[in-house]
Length: 407
Image (tube, rainbow, N blue to C red; front, side):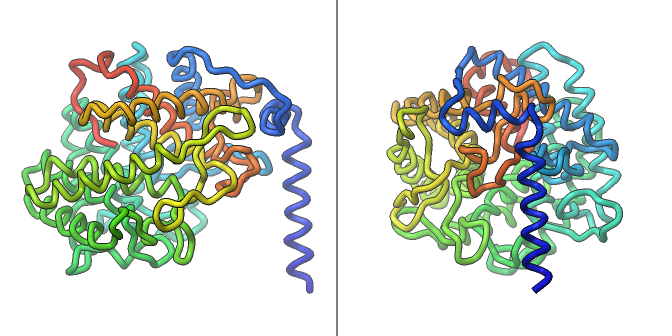
């Protein structure tokens, strides 16, 4: 009987920590429906998001970027996976806003990732805590590859391409014969959102000329396409076995397919493109106003893209805004432009700009309301990263002349 009481005590302690900090109150008050949400010009929201990512980096005395600010616990240890794909965001953001110091920060993060890279070439799972043993994870490895390739393309420094190639070698040797990854994966479950790993392999193949990376990526895309039903829905899009797919992991899956299209043969490219358009349109149709407040998406979807009521996953919403924007530029379909603009207004209103708390100001929470199911009372670094990406996608002309950066 001791364990339940211990968990209850811990839960009450975290609730007390959450509501006991005055700097938390504006965000809590707003999500209760009493606070004022404001959408300002894109540049102001982007500056605030990038400033918060810098504070998350500074909060991590061990290097890397803190996994985020948690109301009940404070700043978390650094997270190698998301630090990796924050690197391209800092490079793009610095170029778009004339902030060269962000490239310097990205360089520090890329070197930190090399220091942590395992002897096998893989990237470790979980937070970078030296008091716990390191273990390799497929998805994390693919995401850090994006950071290394972005630095190689921006600076031409070979050590970053070499690190990406070592990681890609490990991904190829770890892959199953049918194209999926079933070892060293989160929850022990092969997933469709590993299409983002396939995308990383395609990008590495482009920079190294190693065709075996591209072959491995195409094998996974074929496997992932086979997991989807006629509507493009798959239980393997979920974060865990038995769960309904989350907008966060749905968006991961779609972005991987979308970016892989140029590297595929005509048959697979047509199938992937068709699937992405179908699912993106279904999700655009699911946008709803919430109690007269800014538009939002349900956090989960069931078969047939049936929305499952509940809180919103802001991380997934930010990812979908970026994807819809890119889809509009590829297809010219106005539905995707309308969906991106509509949801971006809600995200800008959800970004915490009223709080003076350094862990919250400029950040995007995992959920709306902030006590929703996905990362309750937390501001994960990947939510703010994808918000910054979504804002940057609205103004691609400012990035003219910059090398194409993956991630």
